[in-house]
Image (tube, rainbow, N blue to C red; front, side, top):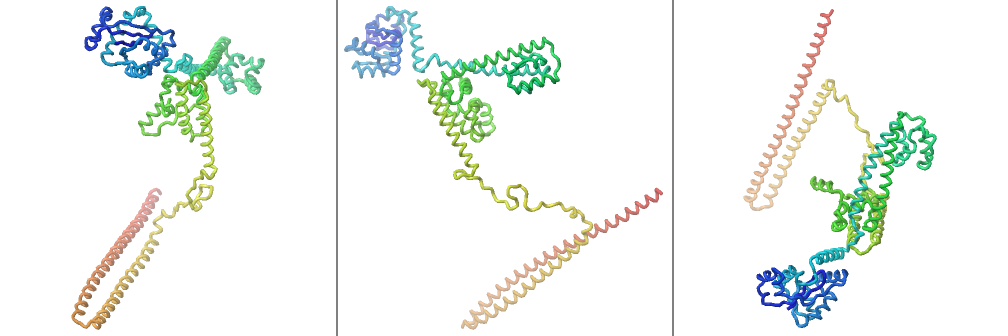
Length: 568
């Protein structure tokens, strides 16, 4: 039996000297304690050396896919005639059996044998030292990992992460230094801060001018436009700033040099970042720009980590605090994070920013995966997706304009009709109700209210009397009708006794109805009497209050008269 063993230097075939020891798997490891005992179990039969690194890489990649390489097939055909072959991978054994018609085995005994061979490999293969095997295995593993991940040394996203971090720090430092220059020089020439808004131009003007007295003599045409130059010279003549010594001006100029040098380095760093982004992630750069793409990569940790994220995660990268706050308080989740600074999202209206950011995140996720794992080095995919997104944005904005214009697709909202409102105004057609102050006075209206109440009571009594009369007349009419019906029944029916019984029953029913009607009439009368009693009591109370008021008035007048007399 032969054993196939793969090494970084090549393929080795070992001849098993004593196959009986393979039956005892537990004791097999003891046979490989030292080199002498191992040589008693196996012996090197043949060795196929790799010519170069590319051949080793090709063979290793084929073994990962469980397929024999071309060199391995030639090696096995020349040395495995009529022999069984022990292999470490069962799939590789099946492939060898199908293509080369060589019997292959794979079991626990074979795996234990492979473990023993690995421990004594340098002793069993002459000319292969441990100092040579270690660098060969390391180089092959690096080449294999680069091949698997399509890795290129030019695609190092760590440089992008460091560059975008440094760019943000430079922006903060530049802003701090520029504000310090403005505040420091503002004591000498405060009007200059309103004339020149740009920080870099401000620093250049201060460095060139020095004291404001030199502004009239100098030429600022290389730095500033003519309008701002004339305004600066006019303001320098009438400035309200304090005088500054030469030493202070020298320090201010040194600070301006620092600002200008930082601005120059920032421009160089931005160009470097732009070139690296176009090399590493060209499709992502075409979609969202260099700065936003670099911030996405830095936030994700690496381009490969970012490629593992779905589009929904890419959409809200940078807004994690807002997301968890919204989930905790059960409010609406954020629609965009770092993608808010992309040019496509900035072009959209406030209503469409959410839709465009979702579409942009989906396309950006595809572009990131293509840049990280694809073979292409161009930005054609990113440019195509950007054109599609711009067309979608125009479509959405056009649909919104159609709604506002009242087109057929988007009809305007129909407001509910309000009869009290004018057309195109918020004022009411009917005049607003004004406050009536005369309703507050009560004393003057007491007599008139009493008379009104009495007049109201008279028609109420008349109505109750009329209702009683109508009920009585109705009862009389009903009695007459019943009598006539009884007479006709007696005439028609020959049997007089049956007719009498029927007439008696009808009389009883009529009496019950009369009792019910009388009870209802009595209840109505009681209700009317109660209402009249309550109104009489109210009238008495009002009269009593009026009498008290009248008695109080003369008593007050008497007291006033007494006071006057006492004063006199």
